[in-house]
Length: 339
Image (cartoon, rainbow, N blue to C red; front, side):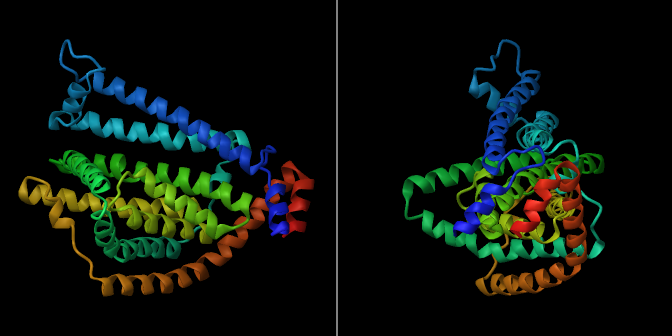
């Protein structure tokens, strides 16, 4: 235990920031990003407010946000809000702690098609494996009336937002939505949670499993769903383990994007076929045995994923040591000695 503590204390970024220092900066930038996101979204919706209405009037603001005629503004506000809240904090942290090289966020060329294909298959199966946990969560929360009421309110708000954003009336709108609602959110979330937060905790604590668990819990909390908390925590854990084994953020971004795009394609097909979005049609109940089979399949696929990632992982580790040696030969020597 003492040895692990000493190793954790030894970790510093390229610019000499400790793990605690980087975590503190990240939370500071998250606070600033939250404020910036709120300002950007208010500016966007201010253009749609009726004459005489005030931004301080929450009722008028919610009416504007839920108006199907303002769906383009809602989509724009969502992607820009996520950019401010997730991308900017992660990018600022990496810039200050490690310099301009995006390598420290997980961007590198060491990736292959088999990793990406397996990554998507794992995420797809993770959705199935996590399905029964929604019913378990609902059964538990039902025994807590106050929390159950809050959970239902959050789900109703989410459903209204999905119906609004899923109002895709043409192929052009669908293609735009693929980028705004599927690709960019996947990229921004992966940069913040895996590229920044998990990266810091892994290197600081020298305990990858703990870092992945903590990151997945925070990842689930951000999505603001009580009923789906366990399900999204499982998805977060799978994404975290995927990044830990590949050390390449592109695998996560593409797998996460394809998962989002699949859900968006369902919404689009529903709207084109029926003229409206029926969320219940996509809420397929997963039997516990199906979830168990999916879980076992995930374990098998992760073994393959580990095999197909091994060579690239070694190349990334060698590249990391080379970059550390360029900036600080003594830090590189210390890292090699501690390992």
